[in-house]
Length: 133
Image (cartoon, rainbow, N blue to C red; front, side):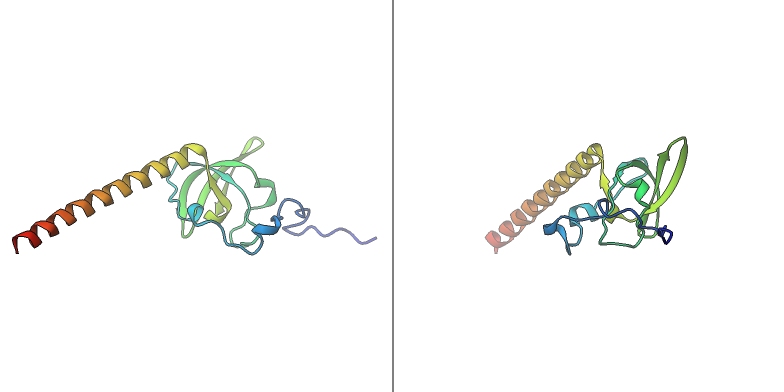
C-alpha cells in the first residue's frame, strides 16, 4: 500500500464542499463589503472557491477576534486548545458575529437616512430657485 498523502486540503471532502446551487458563485457582496474593526468577533467559514488566504481546515467553524489588517486580509486571533494563533484571512472566509452584523446594519440605516435628508434639502433648494425664477 502507498502512504496516504498529507496535503494542505487532505480530508476535506465534506468540509470544503458547496451545495449544488452555490457552486461557481462568488461570495455575497454583503459579506465582502463589511469593514471589520479591531475587536470584532468573526466566524471562520471557509469558501472553497477562493483559495487565496484560505485558512487550514482545523479553523473552519472557529470564532476569532479581529486584531488588524494586512493588505486585503484581516489578522484574526483564534484560540486552539491552550494556544492562541494568529491567522491572516481574507473576508471571503469570514462571517460577522451577530453583534457585528447589528452594528453594520444600524450604520447602514443611519447612512441611508442622512442621504435621504440631504436629498430632501437639495430638492427644497431647487424648488425655491425655480419658484423665484
